[in-house]
Amino acid sequence: MRLISILPAFLFGLFSVAAVEAGAVVVRADVSPQMAPDTIPSGVPFTVDIYMENNDGITQLGYSLPFYFYSPDQSLGHARHRNVHGIGAQTIDFPHIQFHDSSIVMHHEFDSIWNVMNCWYGFSWDGQLPDTVNHTAASMIGWEPGQGEKLYIQFAFFTDETGTFCIDSADYPIDTYDWLFDPGEANHPFNGPYCWTVAEPPFICGDLDGNGLVNLLDITRLIGYLYLGGGEPDPLQAADSNADGEVNLLDVTYLIDFIYRGQAAPVCWPGE
Image (cartoon, one colour):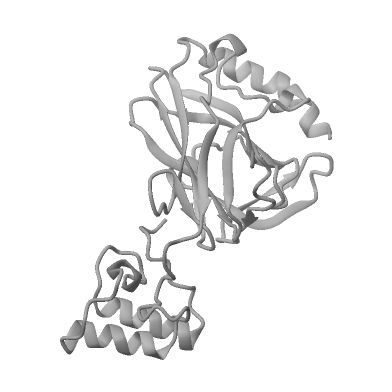
């Protein structure tokens, strides 16, 4: 806990230098893929995407971002973390203990900025809702303004339940982990909560004959449609197994790899 105890003074020095203009850092959340506006397909891997923009006119030298994932009506009990070979988080009470889920992705250009401190802290980061995590970052290089809004952080989840899933900023009892870009009076709010409906998809991706299974018959049906004049799958989107927006030979290959070579299940919605 000694490292954590010195953070407030350290961060205050950085943020005091950076404080010039209020409310000029924009942070918002979205999800992908979506099967309809604001709707996540149940049983399909998804990410919560954090878009950020520095409109401050100055270089930001650090921040503290606490994110809170929850189901407001408790319709969802879990949103499991997926190992996407990203970053894990360490526990608050025992910094040497890690959550080894590697479910957090920081895009390289953003990750490389934070050369003084770049730490993820988990409060209850175990996939059982509610889940809370904090990112504390500091830099001698800084996050320059004027780059436009970009996708910088992604959280990889999976749930096979249906209900409501939300993200918001968190007010943690220890002030060290509060939402902070500049001194408190100059913070730009997260403007949450951001919420989505998790619903059963209207079809099974890759199930072209509608029998509830994805197997060799579906590969045969897809080949027949593409090359032998067979009827169009209904819906056609069920045939777009690699989610690239087109139905072609690549989807045949994807289904073969899924059924016989252990590749990830087809998705059919725009990829992450």
